[in-house]
Length: 136
Ligand SMILES: [Zn+2]
Ligand SMILES: [Zn+2]
Image 1 (cartoon, helix red, strand yellow):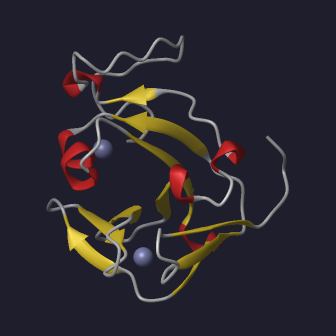
Image 2: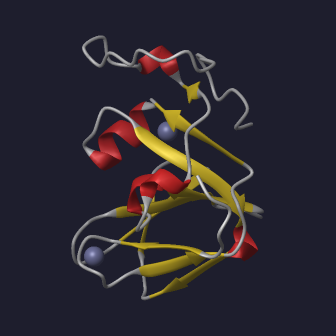
Image 3: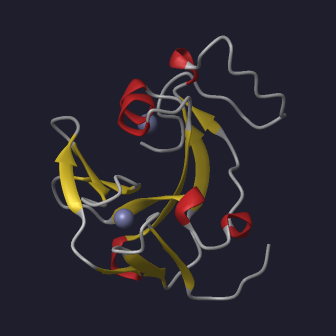
């Protein structure tokens, strides 16, 4: 992992590109059902950054996946780019795997392990939280 900024990323088709002008505040795996269903994947890996340090080109679609949260995605290819709270968001969660170099940010914990799938075996020693953990 290097400290070179900005970090850049985007969706599968390239219609959405973004730049992160700050290193993340933290990063972790989310096993919640909303992440699972919205991505069609057993888990999502998120990095939390100050919202002002997220610069996006293109017009991501927005899906309100709960009363409190919005998910940003590419309308063309469907890649889920980010997550933010609806009201007064100070941070934004970036889908780490959409970075051009996803090795740049390493997840540090698991949250919502309450809904971790039994067949999805993650053998690491990272802290595990049944609920939102450090992502309050
Ligand atoms: Zn796309
Ligand atoms: Zn989640």
